[in-house]
Length: 119
Length: 115
Image (cartoon, rainbow over the protein chains, first blue to last red):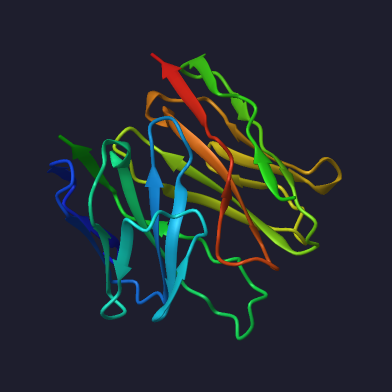
């Protein structure tokens, strides 16, 4: 089945040790997103790619970076994880059908998430 | 300013009861889209429904139904004859035509269905 796949499902890293989370999709969607979700909170958008165009949210810390080498893959790099970065990280994709920026009606499809723990 | 409010933090019902999850939104756009997602304990967000601002028809899908009312800026979700498998956190989200691709999420409602 076409889907959004996140690896690993659980990741443990040490305080300050760089970590990379990966996301792949077989939906051929042109938009990919990374969200951070802490316990009992709504997902918080960190950034998104529209094709190769990177769009960072204003309040996303510099510690978080992303790469999208091709349509199918997107990576989240946390350069120096702190205890406050322990969270579920969700990858999502959507398909933008519009020529202009007027349509936002396509649902986002989410992966299962990676739960990150910091020791 | 755009905003989604899910006033019910947590709801507990007994299996087979009906339950309605409330969602109230604020937007200045005339064209916008509303979504409901389910997040079971395993963590993935599962898309349930999309509704655009021009379509006020209510929708029924099995035990699920949605009531969209522009006059009250609400998009409520009802589960009929709830089951234990319905236990999850449910998020309502808004997407505006004038904005970026950002979802404006509500804070979620945790539904517990007791056997």
